[in-house]
Image (cartoon, rainbow, N blue to C red; front, side, top):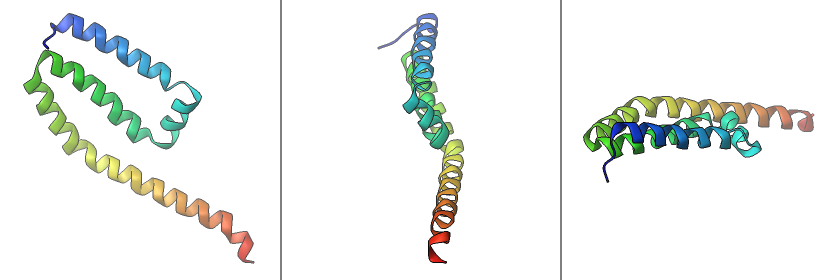
Length: 98
């Protein structure tokens, strides 16, 4: 399937607007707060899907660039989340040991 640029832009805007509304729900806010990296990856995937409808080669190039650039950021985010969870666990269990 191939789309011209204008319909692809309009559809991309509409789908991403719906996604933004979903991120405003209670569950969406949880994802945004506690797994920001996942919401960004999913949003980029939505946009890349529309790019692929216009130009598959450009979408594949962008996908590989996002993987190369995004992987270190996602790893850092997961590492920080792990540190925060460990600190929270230590805080919650500290008073029980005394």
